Amino acid sequence: MDKQMDKFLKRIKSDHFKIIEGIKKMQDEYMRIYSPFKSVILEDLARNLIKAQQLMAPYQELMRNLKTLYQPLISKQLFESVQQIQRSFILPPWGEAFQGFIKHIKEVRVVTIRNAKRNKWIITPSLTMRLLNKIAFAKSGKEIDNLFVTHFKNNNYSNLIELVKKWESNSLFKSRINLIDESLELHKKEYFSGAVTLLLPQVEGIAREFLNQCGKKVRGVLKTIEKAIEKGLQKDKEVELGSLYVDCLLAFVQEVGYKDFGREKQSDKTLLENKSRFNRHAILHGFITDFGTEANSLRTFLLLDALSHLRHPSRKKQL
Image (cartoon, rainbow, N blue to C red; front, side, top):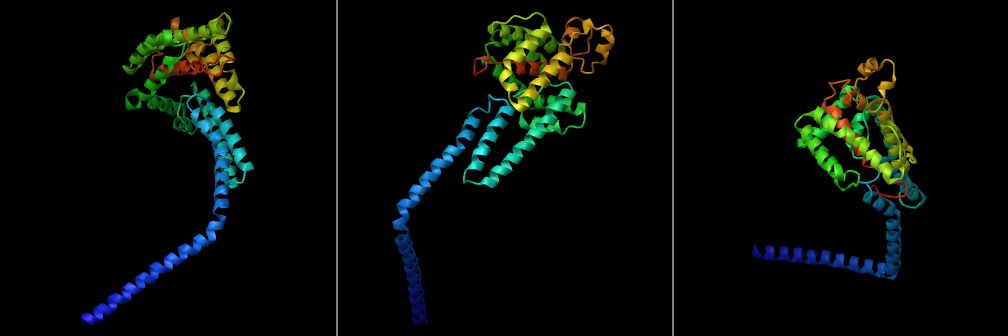
């Protein structure tokens, strides 16, 4: 019995070494074939890596600017990058698919802006992609109101707090940051009328200060804000979607927030028909008293956020 076991073990051991020896021979044969071409392969690999890095450069630059650029401008950069990929030897089908994806995003954004404009809301660069997509597919104005309210109220108002915190380094906001912080506390405590009345004057103050820095003087609240948007968001209007974003902002300012009802013969009736109950003239001059809603308070914060992106035409960064 022991002899049979010994023979069995010897055979296993022999087969084991044969397998190892076979693997070693295969490795040697591979190295024999590979070695003459090793330098060529490595050089070719290095060239491909350099080419790949060059192709990825626009994406790396894009990621560095994600927090500061308008989403339409981001789409433009992505298109330029996709075109570079399509002209190269690396995955042209992927480039075509990605271009189709970006086209779909643009189409969704157009619907987002249309829905926001129709329901008297402002779209700013600070809003998340997730929220923008939900707005595009919302079925009613009430649903859109709830989307904005929920977005900024979740996690103990973390999104609203983060929004306001970004303004601290903006020169146009520095002298007003205490008033803005006070308004934020009022909003969190659901004193929405107080937040609205405290923030509204800051909108025209910031617009006027921006124009002063640009060497421009304009009379009238509405004209001041219009001119500030025209000059401060000029670069954004040069981009296809950016123009839609700015038009949405201007529509809100001209038709809702800063429309001068005092010049209309039936001003009281017009005010009653203004469903959002959000108008600077009507609020500050006592035409309406039921403006203190969470949605209206958020509209004021978003209006300030839009102005936080004003840039002097001769400068690349915000003030």
